[in-house]
Length: 603
Image (cartoon, rainbow, N blue to C red; front, top):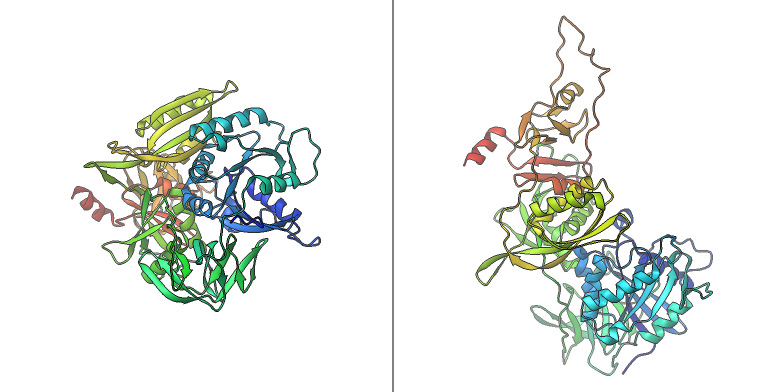
């Protein structure tokens, strides 16, 4: 039976198209907040990194009430690196809102999420947001959305979608551009009319599918998901259908229903609703909580496999343990095991070393977010350069390829094309819009994109836009040259001096400042030639009988290049590691002693 009292929807949009702002407006207008309550902007982006990077990283959910009906809203990430979050969100909803910027139109990552939604047969409502933008091109954007649907093989019913026009930050929605409107009523009405209520049966055996996990210090592990059939009640025994079999006699500690952004504790929930449960140990994403006597497990959520891996090491540099709280392999393993429970698209495996773990994910960005999160929590660790995960297909070694969508000013087309072809990229499509910018589409091995983003920004002087999307596994493309320059490596420990830094200006660009502690084997700069150079960066000017040691104090020195965490990961070479602590990010050679390094290279 169809339950009209519920609507379960996901919001799909590219990074920065305003989906989280629109959800804020829906929460305000549905009466979720008191009139005098202070409301933070972009309340759905609750992680620090989400606010800093301006992107949604993990899928979150909220609920609003409209005319006696409960609308559960899943906010999904707009980046393919967090595709595991997208797949989980879409698996428990009955429809989706596709939010598109009135100027930028549907961008590459939108294609990724739309394809997932259409494959699941979800009805879609198109919302053109930011219609007040002076550079809006609404008619063209709608045409581009139709083209996108045709490209991803949508059915005739799916292409016949309703269109609404909104200004998210002002909380206004319209059926037609010329309509007068002061609120989101047209959007709420369209959701009720076009998105079907969930098909569910309260009298059926209980089936609750866990789609995401949370943790609470009081009740422990919390599973968030949808009750597909039956009832969930406190003080009743259930069976947990996990990957390794069925565990019976499981009891709930707590049962929550969502209201706005908060969870409300309840004694029972009915089918069709999105709820949270606590008390079942070791529940994983994709597990089913079902009837104890007659278990009926549901199909597990399928997630795309990881394509990139990095080795996480315990920090063993000379400065190890001086800046972080958690420094041992026990701490590192416990933290990674916890992350795997909460993040379904990550994999962690042990290596032949007890102090190193292989972490596999969907892209550099996803692993970078994990590293930054651990750094802020007080961890010290080292990571290797990202490497792609290969597969054997029909006896041939295959590697992941990505579709790369680039939007650059016309004058940079040549340099971008040359760099990507050097990285084994194949030009698929090139289209000039006639207003000074060109769209280029490439198919590039994932290896070729490691470290390319910062180079792309330099080549286009910050004016280019690059997006990538996993395409498929294809035959190994052969050697790809990465960084063309060498590095400047400190050959002893100490503090960098102004005198030594001035002497290195003609050798390359320094990445450490003056008065910074360094150790033997630490990378202190990028050389302007191929090959590494060991240098004394702590050398002081000796006092002579000719002049005082401070007589060069008036010499000006070029500022050093500061590398962010993401830029440092991209900069790494195969024989280097990145040391990460709560206070510092340092690049170092895997083998610190220069003599040992020579022997290793010869061997």
